[in-house]
Figure 1 (cartoon, rainbow, N blue to C red):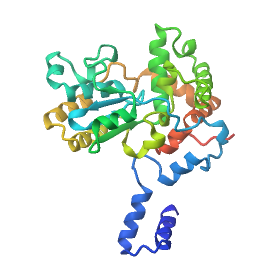
Figure 2 (cartoon, rainbow, N blue to C red):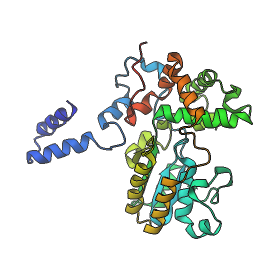
Figure 3 (tube, helix red, strand yellow):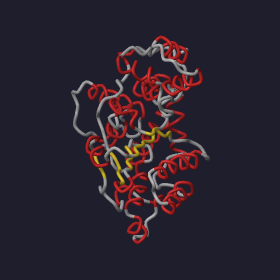
Figure 4 (spheres, rainbow, N blue to C red):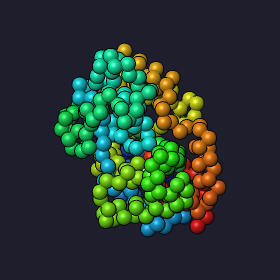
Length: 319
């Protein structure tokens, strides 16, 4: 229906062109970006006219809050990646360290797949926290990308890593909820409510790691600046993502030998704090999916992530 409307709009404007050109234009406008919803959907979300049923719009955490912007940059290749917490950020730091300092990386016996954030070789080299600064650094001929993840998978990965893992030795982590998911979700939701109204603007560890993905990267103004990739779950997920990343690096003229090493490490390595497939992850998933009230709250927190980035809502809910 939306494609038909676009075609009709083109005809109304009396654009004279072969039919195949009109169809191509319509498809181009409809699918502006493969990693996001349609332009029409995103604009409806921004202006508050998108139909959020069965949820009331007022019950949903708002999208496109400009809360956090962190970028890894490789200036020699006019390449940048906007980092979204709990979406391969540690390994992405290692990738950019290797791209920009390959000789030093190898000389220090480092591997992309085994780098830890706390002991990373490059620390904050080529790390920026402002969209405008990155644009000024890279100029007009640049390649910018980010990786998004299914909101439920991202939330559960963060919960297991931060609330269970780090919570075992840092008791105040995750609002001192001691691994109780309901406690954590309730307090996280309340904090998001404050943040979206501007009543809470300072850095907060939990908010920085669990904010909606639309709150990162200045997506409200620059969503379509990015090539948006989707983190892929399952056995074949990372190899597929690795091929997509390689295409981006190739387009940015990253040397083939560097790209081959990145591909090898992504496909065959495993980061030290990955939660995928662990017993803790399976348990957390069961807790969330078997508690409709809890699941509905998580959906309300990340509703617009599902819509903007084309992820399927986990279950139909009755409210």
